[in-house]
Each structure stands twice: as structure tokens, then as C-alpha cells.
Amino acid sequence: MKWWITGFLLIFFSILSLFIGVSDLSITDLFSLSAEQQEVLFVSRIPRLISLLIAGMSMSIAGLIMQQLSQNKFVSPTTAGTMDSARLGILVGMLLFPSASMMEKMLLAFLFALAGTFVFMKILDKIRYRDAVFIPLVGLMFGNIIGSVTTFLAYRFDLVQSIGTWLHGDFSMLIEGRYELLYLSLPVVILAYIFAHHFTIAGMGEDFASNLGLSYQKVLYLGLGLVALITASVVLTAGMLPFLGLIVPNIVTIYQGDHLRSSIWQTAVLGALFVLVCDILGRVIIYPYEISIGLTVGVLGSGIFLYLLLRRRAYGL
Amino acid sequence: MVDVTNVSKAYKEVKVVDDVSVHIKKGTITSFIGANGAGKSTLLSMVSRLIPKDEGSVLLDGEEITSYDNKELAKRLSVLKQSNNIKVRITVRELVSFGRFPYSQGKLKKEDEKLIDEAIEYMQLEDFEGRFLDELSGGQKQRAYIAMVIAQDTEYILLDEPLNNLDMKHSKQIMKALRRMVDDLGKTVVIVIHDINFASCYSDHIVALKDGKCVYEGHPEEMITNNVLREVYDMEFNVCNIDGNRICVFFT
Ligand SMILES: Nc1ncnc2c1ncn2[C@@H]1O[C@H](COP(=O)(O)OP(=O)(O)O)[C@@H](O)[C@H]1O
Ligand SMILES: [Mg+2]
Image 1 (tube, rainbow over the protein chains, first blue to last red):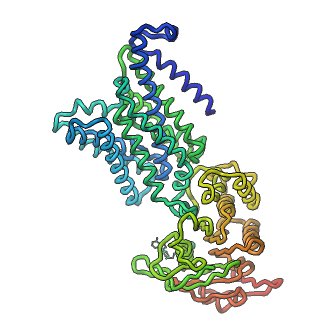
Image 2 (cartoon, rainbow over the protein chains, first blue to last red):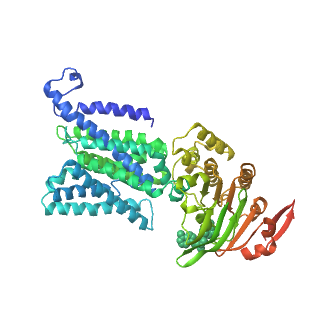
Image 3 (cartoon, rainbow over the protein chains, first blue to last red):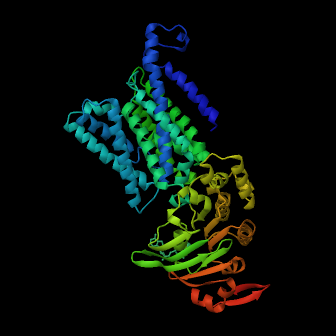
């Protein structure tokens, strides 16, 4: 896929996304917006679009980094317990500090996501049977265990309602004032680009990295830190976006190769595009109602995941 | 020079490298030979600080190798391990460019590009430079890795079985290239090698390991003899003098 095709599609769907919805707002109104239409555009539609784009982009890059560092194409925030851990962190935050600010919740989500991913990486080290498919299954189980702890705690303390949004990704609630945390992902993504060479080299193995004077451990921790930050900010604002960080990087690296410098922007654009399309689908399928993005991304994503699994020999995954 | 003194390494109480001392002179090719499992790779990995040693010291130009700064060391000593079956899809040129990473940290300058071009040319990889590694044959891949080490342009070059997977033509090409790097550029090369005849024809110094111990070392003329080789490999050899080179015959 040429970069300009995805780029063009991204712009096209972005504009389209602004003019889909229950409130009456069409592109022809753009230069004669009523007060009400302005409100819809600036308070709801534009924040929604921005958060879609950032979330899609950063989650995909998080997946790309994880796959590179673990040397496994099927490791991602979904299949390594990162997302579930972030969500547990949010719940723990709500239990222990009910009046915690968004930033404080973010910090807890980040710490939990980091710890969870780290534990998974340690489990990976211990697994002898390192088949490419086996590992994400272990990760999914690990995520499910953490997920059930979250659910149990939520039932126990009557917080099921509150964690509902974090159970399924949902952009419909992301109005002005509730999505800005996502901007945190932007500098993280830029850091990922700056350290693209480091991640690629670390992905070639510890000895390979040492030969080039690179501390494998440091790069690993840096990468996991970035992944945890991205995941925490996305889960806290938009919710769970399953399989995104798994399928997008895989599609890109099939034709672009594994060097992060060449795959990172493609991954960003395709990730944003994928979430955008899923969101638009979710908004039009049962119009005027909406299917949450967690569901559309999950259904499409797991479908593509299965396809990649079945075709993995052909793509050398 | 590299001074290896009384180095040992044990895995689960079994000493796989046992009290080995070797002196590696500047501007020479030193070959480690020995049967499978003799401890050659382990020794090379300790000399290049890839694995920690249990005992002994490795001094690079007088300073313990593990006390060097990682980045500085990467500009002075490069090491290529035995099996490079990493399944990463990067192109040959991207791989060779990594050789410049210690100097450029990823931001390649003009002179880096020039050295990368030269390394690719040196290993005759021009036709493959845009190909992904996983689309190459074992030998082509091996040459790409060696090109990376050449681009790294270090004073000391340590290679574990660099002739793995290579046909005769490319084996000879690599040995000649190493010889040139030593003779013309003053580099110091240490290789683990199984082809005893290449070791005989191209080395300045041969170190023979057996069961983790250094059993013999010396100039090829002292090393490539029926008696020494019989003891190192536990089999019969017939060393002949052909065109001034000592060649071993052991095939039947
Ligand atoms: N990481 C390890 N754990 C346990 N044993 C090892 C390890 N690496 C090497 N060995 C053992 O040490 C011995 C020497 O190995 P090696 O140095 O690779 O031999 P060579 O390169 O001479 O064939 C072998 O018996 C091997 O099984
Ligand atoms: Mg070996």
C-alpha cells in the first residue's frame, strides 16, 4: 500500500466522520454554522475525531514496539495483559482514592500496565515452548486473569457501572474536557520515533545489541515504559481497543519490513485509519444508535487476527 | 592486544572453559580450533564481554574488557556470533547500516553512507542490498552480517564460524578479505573456524581447545602436524606440503 493512499483515505474519512451523527450537521453548513451546530462540532465531533486518531495511532505503535522487543509478532497490549492491567489500575485508583484526579488515575493505570507487561515478559522468559502462537494465548489468559480480578473487585464494591466504559472502548463520551489526556501519547510517539533504531536493534537480540554498544535492558525498559504510557492514556480515555496493536503493525511490516524507521509512520496512519473506519461503521450500522468502538474493533480485529494466524506461514510471521 | 589470563566458565558445575590463557597480538589473525563443544564459542563470548566469566581476566590494550564503556567498546571491538537466524525483516542495507550505529546513533552522515557502500561492495552484496534478510540464502545472509562488521570498522574483529554456510568461493573471499584487513589496515582478527585448511593457510596463530582447555597453541607450522591434530581431534590426519602450504587430508 502506498503511503499517499492511506494518507488520502485518512483525510477523507476524517472529514466524513465530522459530518456523521444524529445532530443535523452537513458539510454544506460549514461556512454558516448555527450556534448549536458550532457546539456540536467543537464540543463533540472534533474532540471525538482527534481522540480516535490519536488512540488508533498510538495503540498501533505500542503494538509495533512490543512485537519488536519481544521478537514475537503476536505480542501486543491485548495479548500481553497490558490493557487489562491498566484497567485494574484504574479500578484500584477508584477504590483507594475515590476523589483522584484524572492525572492520578493515569499514574496508577500506567504503573499497573507497566507491572503487568513486565510480569508477562518474565513469564515469557520462563516458557520453554516458544511457539509463536502459544505465547499470545498465554498472554490472553494472563490478561483474562487480571480482567477477572478487576470484575470481581468491581462487583464486590459496586463499581460495575463505573468500569463499564473501560470495559468496552467508547468514543461517544469523549467530549471536550474528557479526551485531552490522550495528548500525552503524542510526545511518547515522537520518542518512539527517535528511538526507532534502538528498538530495531534490540529486537535483533541481546548479543547483537551489545556488539553495537547498546544496553539491551535499558532499551527494553524504555520500550515497555512507552507502551504502558500509551496504553494507560488510551484505556483511561477511550477504553479498551482490543487487537488494534496486534493487527495493524503486522499488516504494515508484511510489506514494509521490520525496521521501525520505515514502519512507524505507516503503522501510525493505518492504525488511525482503522479505528476511524471502525468508528464510522459503528455509527452508521444501526443508525441512529451506535455500536461501541470496542465492539467493532474487537470483531473486525479478532477476525483479522484469526486470518493472520491461519496465514502466518505464508507471511513468515 | 588482548591478554586472556586464566579464564574459566562453568555451566552447572561443569567447566566448559577451564583456566585458558591466550595472548592475541595486534595485527594478526588468530584462529580457535577444536571439536564441537570444546568451548570455542564460550571463550570467544567471554573475550568479547557478551557473557560474564567466572574467573580470570581479559585485558584489551591493558584494560579489563568489562570496565569499558559499552559505546566506546563498540567502536574498538566487534563480534559476530555463530548463529544469526534472527527472523527480523530488515534489508541488507539496513543491517549493514547498523554497523555505523556506535558512531552515528542512527543519524547517518555522508561518511557513514560511504563506509556502508564500501562494506557492501567488499562483500559483493550490491545486487541484494534492497532485499530482506529472510529472502536470502544462508551464505548471502552470512556475508551481510560480515559486511555489517566491516562497516563497524573496529580495530578488533571477533567472528564465530564466519565460514558457516558459505561455499568455497565465498569462504576464500572472506578469508582473503580478513587477511587484507589485517595486512593493509592493521586490524586484529580472531575467528573460530572448523575448516582446518583455511586456518592453516590464513592464520598467524592457532589456538587448539579440547574439553575447555587450551591444549596447544602456536604458529600454523607447529600446529598443523599429524601429532598435534591427532591429539586435538582424536582422529588420524595426513598433513601434506602443497605449494608451500600445509594441507591436511583426513577424508578417508
Ligand atoms: N548457555 C549454556 N548453558 C549450558 N551449557 C552451555 C551453554 N553454552 C554452552 N554450553 C556448553 O558448553 C560447552 C561448550 O560450548 P561451546 O563453547 O558452544 O562449544 P564450541 O563452540 O567449541 O562448539 C558445550 O558442551 C555446551 O553444551
Ligand atoms: Mg561454537
